[in-house]
Image (cartoon, rainbow, N blue to C red; front, side, top):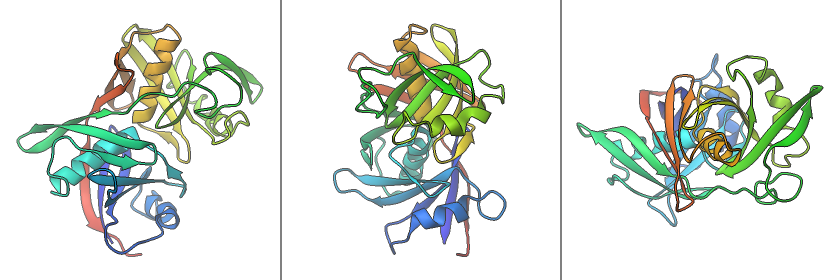
Length: 274
């Protein structure tokens, strides 16, 4: 099987062209993504024909579960399909389980140097995310491993829970990630982001990703942290979100859409026996 390894600020993926023979990618993902015995990745990005847009992206997490959207993934996906000539446009639609996303490519010497993605409108009501309860899920209480935490949960493609802490890089928070992801208030589980607002336009973030665990970056997480930070009065609507290997710029614009800008990198191509 031919594959391409890509990453967005360390959030890494295996891109597979699924336009030929169909495969059970959910069964393949744990094998391919295993970091000791496989290629190693946070998940798979499968290229498929689009029905309502130019192309479709199927996302499978490293544990074999499907994801509706992935912010870092769609930037890498857009770079891949453009540079392979699959979609010869610098702005196009990508079908996902969260709807049609529209990446816009920034080119340098004919290669994709960065990508801005219109991530659509965030969903804020508990019933839409979903989260147990009514109204908007802003600054609520949750007890995990005997600790009381305050959280805000929003949906930007996938559900993200944001918890503000003094030091997001402190490993104690990742030790809580699995229990928060599987807490009963989140019927479809949740991604977990530990964040700290440095000023009104800068936030530091670390992510425990649903179906994957700790990751170096998360695009939908950065979008959700930006939205949550504005809702909690910590920042404005335009935010730089600092993650482990770099920064994503997020704008929650006046049209209520969230726009994410960041890099995408090709690591290597290869072939693996199944």
